[in-house]
Length: 274
Image (cartoon, rainbow, N blue to C red; front, side, top):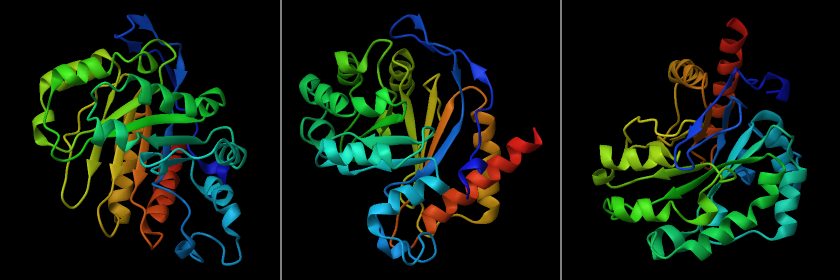
């Protein structure tokens, strides 16, 4: 899909971040969609042209999709040179979402994490400065049961608080988290529930952040044209007052990438009718 067909901002809104007890600057909302990664030679020739070199994969990806979820940061930080290359390969309206390091979510399990959280945010500062930073995804392990006190304390980390704080989404994978006590804490800090769908998991569709929503659509085999159309209807409505980030599953086959392209096309058609 040519980049000109990517849905453009729909309308300006004003969001409130209760944690800072302040007004967020007026923002223009949009829909961002992509997959979890782009470096897949097996996507040739259906998504990537057969002769395209790997070093140009991201450039081509960003000509068809307008966001990507980077899982690499779960295990290690890319070099500054690598990060600069990613920025250079993508247009101004492209957004990167990054998965939080496992040291934070799986090893420390949110305890005493101010230093690693600060480093994570600092590493991504060039993306924030370029206006290309989407949500930071904190994906908790399935055996991590709800601990509202710990969650509230974690979200007061200096790197995650204040008017310059990054967008945050939490993917909970234990059912005990899906309770009003959790949602109240997230609303207070303007944090989204990452709404995940897979063959094994379905997260309640609850909106807690005033500025953004995050979805991970990871069902095996992808989604039908009718389901893609339904997603476009749903997320276009949601994007009237917040940015919406939608990530389809990456696989050896380019099914997720093609789903994302079809989804953005459907959103563009809907926007043209409004």
